[in-house]
Length: 388
Length: 228
Ligand SMILES: Nc1ncnc2c1ncn2[C@@H]1O[C@H](COP(=O)(O)OP(=O)(O)OP(=O)(O)O)[C@@H](O)[C@H]1O
Ligand SMILES: [Mg+2]
Image 1 (cartoon, helix red, strand yellow):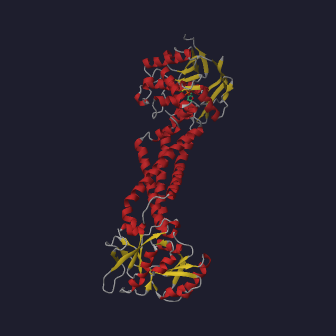
Image 2 (cartoon, chains in turn blue, purple):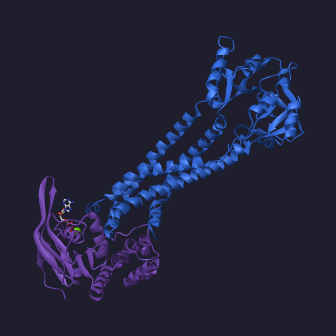
């Protein structure tokens, strides 16, 4: 027997109480880990941003289009090395629920401004030279069991053709991957199509584009380039806003609501609740044991050791419950992965989430354990025995 | 040889702003190997005295020496160490840990020593054997009778081999038969293992097991004629 055994036995002396406490801590960490992971997935685009990549969008909002003519004018701005345009097609495959993110673009330019997006040289050539070719990201292709050479229709839930149909027919002639060396764990979960093939069939919104992606010479000219571009189109019907790709990604996310704030609020509320429940329960549990603690002291257990033993119970409880909660979140994520993959990519709980989680567990155990540990340490033997 | 020397010992409490004196100017010596029964009316300060001898309470004035070392002015930390090394306590209501079985309860004082797990096992087995309860080692307190629980408590008190056993009404909660067997055990520990025993009791029959009987009344000791 050692102090750990003693702590464990004390913790589970009332099984129901211990299990309820464990469950409440589990739930808090389940919420924490699940939301942390969601947030991480939504932010992955922001993290994959490159410092010398700028994005020009309509200053009203990035969902509002710009005239196609802007593209050539942007390309000629001093400091711009390369530029590509992209338009949101808003696709789905087979079923409306089965999202199939597709952008209409100039293939060669797009692959140039996104060098981390790779295909074999043959596929790259095929994509650039075939008007009805669809280049599909590896993860998206795997998920939808699409392979090279397949002929597939992709529907738009935004646009229709002049003939009224919403379906564009494609031949899959390239599969794209993200360069593994970029070290960023972003799934290639989107597809690219030729702008011309998309634009000429459109019933409305023709000769417009969604946004322009710019590669600058260097990070140092970013500010000058964005200013020049935005001034160029100032006072036109389509004013622009040019910012770094990371900023664009964040703006994209803020459309979904301030997820970071929501995360903090939900997790915060869960933790304050748990804190109060666990804190009160620990104080009560120690009060019930005043006499036993007095016996420990009588036997010669020094005050610091009693402090550690009570603190240890809090630590055990919080870490045990916390890791169970994170494990449960991993289980849940594994279950929803098949459904959510198209939107968020394959999710799993990161080491970061674990690390911060462990810090939270430590914080929780310190806050809930300090008070009981102090009062246990300071129990006066004679007074405690006086209470029959 | 003297184990304890008490000089000019006083204990006062303030109760509702008013000072209450439990005893004053108490002098006393306790010899090594003695077995003393302390009797006296309720509220006469028997428990208070025993607590001071065990280093869990302090006198208001006066000194307590144990083996030439003053214990009334030791720091809390040093008193803890001193208690672990020198005294074993036996209480009226056993005070066993309900979450631990008999052997684990007996093991507690050994957690404060440097003994290896194997040595601890041997000590526990010996202590349980001495009190005759080896067959109940794996039982939890709630599975034991009062007499059996008190035996476990005695095993816990002697397992680290202290010189002194301090017993506060050790048979107060037991029937006659169990009480007698516990008292016989104390007598045995005194005569065979040379433990000094100081026992507070209300029961004249229990006091007869001691070598000496003292009456504490109105803050004074009155020696009774010896039992043996
Ligand atoms: N913390 C305290 N504050 C005030 N008075 C106290 C305190 N502890 C004990 N007393 C008083 O000191 C006196 C002696 O108490 P003690 O417990 O030593 O008596 P006792 O002889 O053991 O009595 P009993 O036979 O009932 O156990 C009592 O009058 C008691 O009320
Ligand atoms: Mg008493």
